[in-house]
Image (cartoon, rainbow, N blue to C red; front, side, top):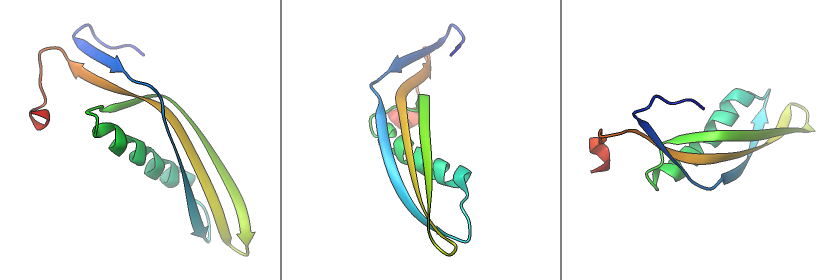
Length: 93
C-alpha cells in the first residue's frame, strides 16, 4: 500500500471475527460484510487504530428451509494506525 511521505502507519497483529446472520427472502452479502467489518473497526478504534489492511473474508450461505438462510461471515484483517506526521486528531486528546 502506498502512502505519501508525511503519512505514518503503525501495524498491529491480525484481528478476526465471525458473525452468523439469519436472513429471510434473500441475502445481501455486501451489507452483511459491511456489518461484520464494522465490528472489527469498532474493536480496533478502542485501541486508537483507524484503518483495516490486508483484509480476507469468507461468506458461507446455507439454505435452512423455504426462503430462510443462515449466513456466516468471517473477516480477518490487520488493524493499523494511519496518521499524518505532526497532525493530531483532536478526538484522540
